[in-house]
Length: 410
Image 1: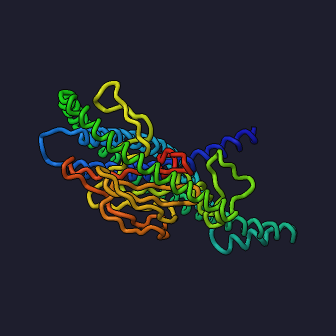
Image 2: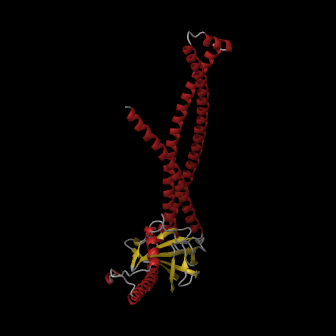
Image 3: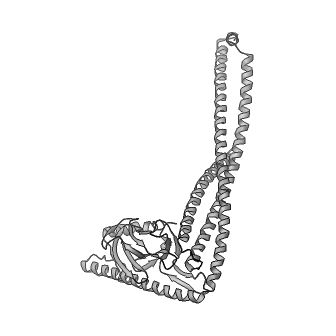
């Protein structure tokens, strides 16, 4: 039975630790979600103040709704975690108060006993009236232990009072946090209703412009196809040149096979390539702040039924005058331009390459070594399309294109 109680007590302590950790983690998640939402709101505020609805505005509103729902969901989890912690602290405080009452009653009883037997004479008489030396010694030890016990009881009372004060302070803090978070939840719910009304209005407006949207989509798809063809050709040329060069200089290893498209790397390139791969899911974003406005792969059109787009990378929307930055150390291998997509940069990281397109000013040169988070160029702001500032970002491994969302930090 004692063993079972010990196990239960251990599990309780573990649950308490997890609960406290969860509150801290949820608070951090809430703050991060709020920051992301603030960025989206800023992007929306930068769109032109016109009554005309655009597909860009609808996309931003949709993103805002998604982020706000996520924020409210995180807030709900935090409120529940705080409620559990408050209940636990209440139970612990009541338990401590019961213990304090027992300590005080015990101490009061000892004080009364000490008062009855007060005085040096009574103590001396108690010792001298012993029938033997051993009995006298035992009585002396008893008196010393009694005094020490009284001291320990005083210490217990003081410690328990301090612990109660500490728990009460924690309880007050959690209650105040819970109240503040509940108010934030109500505010976000009201904003969500406003966003949904905007979404419905924008969607209905765009549905009446299907022909215009189809024409715009065709134009944008042509620009995207031209950009993808340019990037594919540049990367294929780089890989092909590297393969030929290494075969000619005898650097290729016996295990290299032409069918796989994999060529031998220098020691430095192998190190960078390995480090890049090891950071999958943890790479910094190619912008300091922003949101993914176009996901990788085949995606449904937000308003046109049965219409899809096939994105060869991801689109990240951000605020005006934002710079693109390298996601990892590497060497700049290409600077290029494509009509409709402005300028672009390709950075090699061993076997891997990252592509940054839709830039205006470029800050790096071909052959230059760059570090992680180094600025490489300013992203173009389209004054003709709601001041849209959007980066096109790709990750390649040799000739294979990868999903960037699997590589950048969540």
